[in-house]
Length: 102
Image 1 (spheres, rainbow, N blue to C red):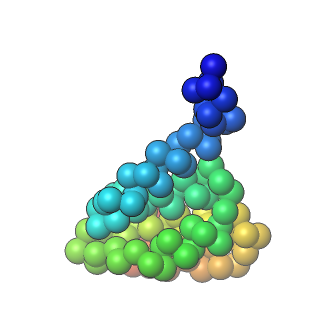
Image 2 (cartoon, rainbow, N blue to C red):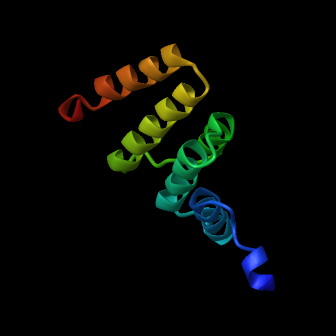
């Protein structure tokens, strides 16, 4: 019974908790960083924390897939904060930088 009381109340809370635990020891993994940001935006609805995590992350320019993913997550975070203009500008910048993906 005691273990039952410690369970998270929602799947979103448990996903974010797992990502945070993984994040503590693996911050250098860019894919895991993007998963953390995605969890902040989608699970916690915390655009401000997601932007802070993106700003702290060093996404290597040599991996276009991660650059695009970080840009899309940044646009999602801006949208979550109600900053549609910032989201649009971010997406336009991605489209200009990666026209083959637009």
